[in-house]
Amino acid sequence: MSMIDETKAPMTPDEQKAYQAKQKQRAVIMAGLLAFLVVLFYFITFVKIGTAT
Image (cartoon, rainbow, N blue to C red):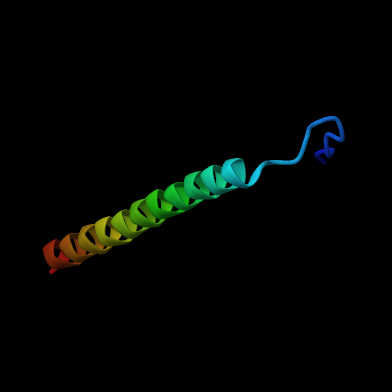
């Protein structure tokens, strides 16, 4: 379990915006990676089923 560091000052509005922008960028990258894997697995399955007949 993580502990909250009481000694650190809260983020300024500019720091918070930068932090949220990084979070959004990571979320977009993860969504793109997930979509790529879904398409990849779909094509692998499609090819394996096509060669089995």
